[in-house]
Image (cartoon, rainbow, N blue to C red; front, side):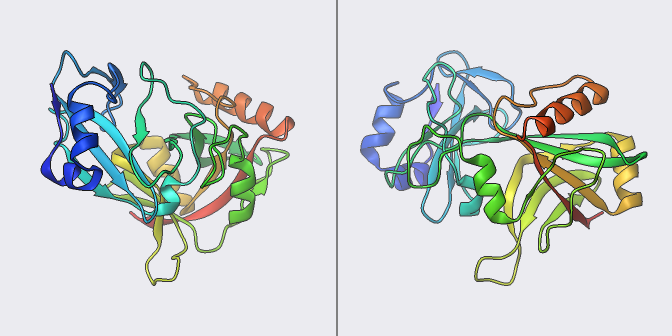
Length: 258
């Protein structure tokens, strides 16, 4: 039920491709990298999707009905960090070449946060697993340390908006969230630090707020800190707890797009 396209095979090699097709290195169950719902490689047609950076490659899995097997070029910065362990039963991606560590996906949630008495559009970024420094296998989680190096500042009190981070922006197009952009590395165009596999729909209230403020407050926390919160008041409580524990960093970013 697994499809490995010719372009993916060319990148990972025939030997690795045959191991995948034989079920050796493919997970039984996965979260579709496109629609984020569960899939099963033995029950539904499944595509292999290879995300390729400058030094790192990550193989993910998707329902064939969502996207075909393909190679997707992404900025190396988007692939930085590592998951300490991704099991075959619950893993979503596998490092398949260049002897780099397993890579983490970033979970991104949009919500409205009350800051200084005003409603502000915010994004909360939390990895799906621990992040190790590129080129290492962990297991120390250095997600916040890496963000400090990028210019993100510690958030001690959510009531105070984080400072602007020069060169960074949030890309919104046609009312949907596409990416968080960082300054170019040796080039002229910004690079995607995080990029949605499919443009993410945001609530009307969030879109109205961001069109008014023209900026987004981006908060980041280590894996397992915030979690999935069903309501914005619970999201705020989780942010407050993370800030009090010294596990929250943030930055204000201008809106790119419409």
